[in-house]
Amino acid sequence: MKRALVSVTNKEGVVEFCQGLEKLGFEIVSTGGTMKKLIEAGVKAIAIDDVTGFPEMLDGRVKTLHPMVHGGLLYLRDNPEHVATVEKHGIHSIDLVCVNLYEFEKALRAGKPMAEMIENIDIGGPSMIRSAAKNFKDVLIVTDPKDYDDVLNAIENNLDDYNYRLNLAYKAFSCTGAYDAMISRYFASVVGDEFPDTLNISLKKVEHLRYGENSQQLANRYVDPFVQKSLLDYEQLHGKEISFNNLNDLYGAVALVREFGSQIVTAAIKHSTPCGVAIADSGYESYMKAYNADPQSIFGGIVAVNYTVDENTAIEMNKIFLEIVAAPDFTPEALEVLRKKKNLRVLKLHNLDSRDAKYDIKYLEGKVLVQQLNNKMIDEMKVVTNELPTKEQLSDMEFGMKVVKYVKSNAICIVKDGVTLAIGGGQTSRVWALENAIHNNSHIDFSGSVLASDAFFPFADCVQVAYDANISAIIQPGGSIKDQDSIDLCNKLGIPMVFSGYRHFRH
Image 1: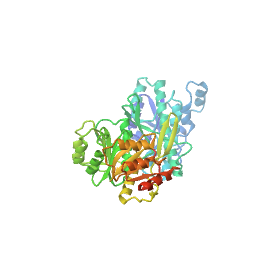
Image 2: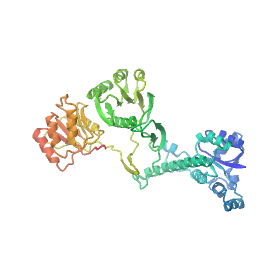
Image 3: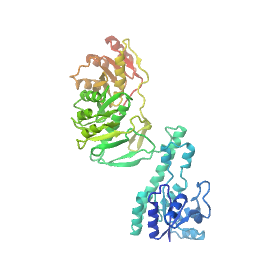
C-alpha cells in the first residue's frame, strides 16, 4: 500500500484531499492538529509517532525528524542497496508528502515579538519538503492547496510522470526558498544589517501583464512579501487592466504626492516625469492649477492626488483623456462621473504615507544595484547670496525641490505660488534642461518664479539664463568646485540663491 504523509498549517481542503487519496489506495500518516482534523472527518490516519516509535516532543519542535520518515522519503526505489537498507530497518516507503509551513509571514505582519517569531520558524516541514523534492521521481511533493484536485486527477489517470513530478519539486523548492528568504530578511532587520553580504529577496507573482514597456516584451507584476505596506497598494474601482508602464508611472506620481504630507496636492505624470504639480486650499483648485500648468502634456497621463476626489473635480478630469486617476478616496458622485469612461483606471490608494520599503533596485543583466530609497529632501536651507529670499520664495523653493526630485536628470523645475510653470529633464547638459523648460513654455511670464535644480550648477550659465528669463530666485544642492562663480553672478544680478545640500539625481 502506498503511503502519504500529510502535515499542514493551512488546512483548507486537506480533508477532501486525504479522502481522495484513500480512495486511490493510500494510507495516511499525519501529525498533531492535522491528524485530529482528519480523524474527526473519518479519515483513517496513522499517527507519526506510531511510525517513528518516538512521541512528538519539545512542544512539537521534534516529530518528523527521524530516519523512519526521511529514510522512507529519500531511498531510491531502483537502487538495490537502498531497498535492502530500508527493508533491514523496517522503513516503510513514503510516496507522497503534503506539507505547508508554519505561518511566519502572517506572524511578521501581525507584529509578533521575537520569541513568537522564532516559534513560527518551521523545521520539520521544510526538511520533509526538501527530502521529498530531492527524490521527486519516486515521491510526489504537494505544497499548495490549489494543487490538490490536480494531483488526485494525475494519480488516478496515471499522469504523474517524471515531468509532472519535476514541476511539483520545482514548486516545492520555490516554497522553501521563499520561506527561508523571509526568515533571513527578518533576522537582518533585527540585527540592523541593511546591506547584508547575502541579500535574500523572494518575490511573489501576483499578476501577468499584457506586455512590458513595449509590446514585444513579456512582463509580470511581483510583490515583495516582506514589505507590509506599499505606496502601490490600491483597490481598482474601475477601468481596464493596469499595464507595466502604468505601474511605473503610478509609482512616481504617488511617491511625489507623498512628499507633500498634509498639503493638498495634485501631481500629473507623463512618461514617468511630472508635467503639472500644484498645491492649493482645495482639491478642485489643486487639480485645475496642475492641469493648467501643462494642459498639453497631461493628455494621456496619470493623475495622483492626496485628497478625496469630489464630483466637480471628477467632471474636470473627465474632460480629457487620462490613463489613471489615483486618490485615497472618491465621493459616490465622483465615481459615477469617472465610470462614464470605460477604460479610465480609477484607483483607491491605501497607504499614501507608507515608508516600509527600504530598497531601490536595478537589475542589470545579472548585476544588481541596490541602494536606499531617496527619502531625504533638504539638508538645510542655506542662503549663500547677499540677497535674501522672501518667505514666499522659500516656500516655493521647498515646493520646487519636491517636484524636481521626480524629474529625470538633468532636471530643472520652475515654480511660482505652489504651481509648476515649466519642467525640463532628461538632458545631458543642465543648461539645456533649463533652456528647454523656458523655450517650451515661452508663453509664460516667469517674473517672480523660483528655479529648482536637482544637482549643482557646474558653471554660472544657468544663473544667467534664469536671470534673462526673469526668474527671481534659485535653489540648488551646491557642491560644485565652481559654486562661487554662480554665487558671484547671483550677487551681481541681485538673485537670492539657496543651497539645499542634497542632490536628487533620477536616472
